[in-house]
Image (cartoon, rainbow, N blue to C red; front, side):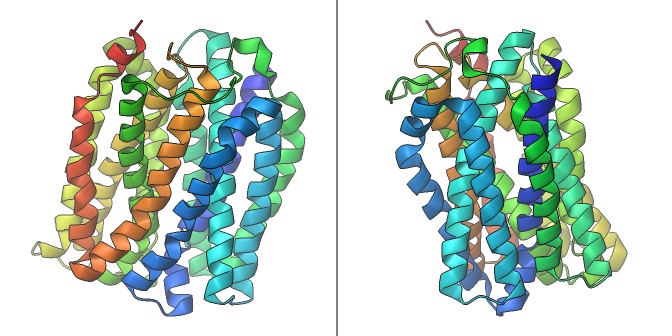
Length: 388
């Protein structure tokens, strides 16, 4: 049990570490290729295209080989795609190569996300209490570590390609060590999918919430560096502040929220944290319009993004935990649907922001999610779990 839990937590950490190496480099990519916001948005839309491709076969893939073997294969492919991203930075790849690489990264990332959350559901059922937030906390720990690494690399003028390559090397070692300790699919109950079933209204509502929440997370993570560089005119030493604030606060939130959920219930925590996301984004995005300059301006925005990160922290784990317990379909199928919807939002959010920012401003574009996230107040995860 302990080894299985550590192994699954380790794979959440791998996913976060590699993901952070990419999203913390979005502003570097914009500078490298000399793109405006709209052009960067078109480039980033390759991610959701890859996600959609994986959605067409993910359920059958995991039904055939199970989440354990699926996670090992998906993690291997994800690391290979991450190595491709590093190579694109190092060799200044042309746009078509970038599009294909980002699409592969999105496709493999979705499969990794589905498999690791299914494995997390197996362990959570074995333990018999809420631990999903702690798994996602490991994702946030390494995301935060990746942000700190990116900040240090920026200060030392280390190229993004070398930094991402180092990240892939470290993650590959962890992958080789942890793979043998993953739990079998059969040990946690009927989690292996038996083909695709159409989600009922309750699960579809959770999927829409995942689309919005992870869309917000992806938009904030990918564009916060650009926001500091362009909207706040931050010096290069402060460009990564927002990303580090989001990831640091998410880490704290995910390690304290399991206890809060057990005490106050998933519904209250979900609704309270949605309010924090909206308030935090409002503060951060209003910063350029306040009578602030220099350090005061950057600290105000950073505080807002920290509140946003804390609010985001519990939302996705709560949804995954509830999907794992849905009575309407096998857990692996429910996670496949929810994970694909969430990852689609994660990769659709950034390009959507790019196009809206070109038409309006980056503050207005990101503010869209401050409003959309309030729609999740209509979700009652406790009611969905209790549906017969």
